[in-house]
Length: 144
Length: 281
Ligand code: SF4
Ligand code: FES
Image (cartoon, rainbow over all chains, first blue to last red; front, side):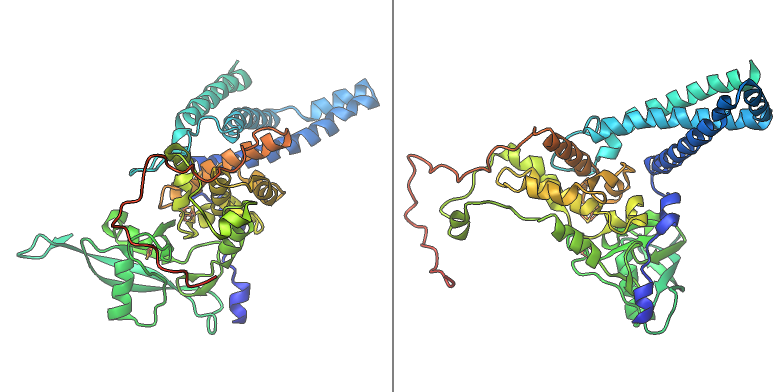
């Protein structure tokens, strides 16, 4: 009996990070959290780095000089990607949480069409938008 | 797939990797393999029954109705929670089928999850009609009034089996033990949206807390996995709307529906016998 108590079989972080055979929205749930946390981390670093300004122009210039180069351009692009995805997916989530785009309760019939199915068009439109914006900004970051 | 001669009856040899766990002996669950020819039409539950009857009587699993209505037989099959009696084995399109107990619930033995958590959460949202007219409830005079449309507004959610599948699909339940979970949210909405009920405020109290409805971020997994089309994800979103409206003092429900008016110009047919006398007072 003792072993049973400890074996609570909760998926934990594993179940959170691995959406397995579930559908795309569950992957978006993970991405949304990761992008949100990354943006928060970026914001803190951003405030810290740009805080160099209070030590005068020289300090500002050396700090800015230390965060250039291909690695930082790539990181900045990731911030951009997180921002675009989090923002547009966030619009979808806000609408859904207000009950918009998920239909209304009704007697279910086979094959079941649930709220997740009903919001799919909106989801795909927003995700295509994310890709388009990211392609344009990738051109702007790396090519132009 | 080989066809037996003389019948148009397909069989296919399938290997089942079945989770075994005896809390008295094992520290960790392990997978045991059983291979046998499965014939067309067998559900995953039929295969488990076959194993228990013919191959290994020590296998434990839970099932009762075998027709998708009791919610006992939910298991995690090839990485997805399903009702095993409700799923054709051939439909899985696999030569190897892995069957585990529902994740996010403690294992009692082999494939049997301990669903206590589900029932506690379900109870916490007061899943019954709450009214103040105690006298009418104790000794009813007529039925409460409800139109067919008002019935449809919550009917979908009342099909919940309490099978627990949605809680094992939910990524939030996976990390937050205290999260109230899709099943309870679905039922909270079901009763809140019932015109006969007056308990919305109490139920919103039960779900509007740090581990309540706001932990749902619409991963949609519960709605996709639910075998009865209950759509707990939709219920959760509509509950958020109710909870937010309540903060602004809006969206209050009209008073719970009263008893239906007495029909006019009708009389009781003469050949209907009287109800038997009450056996309890
Ligand atoms: S809502 Fe669906 S998946 Fe969840 S317990 Fe009820 S029937 Fe099962
Ligand atoms: S045995 Fe009753 S739902 Fe499967």
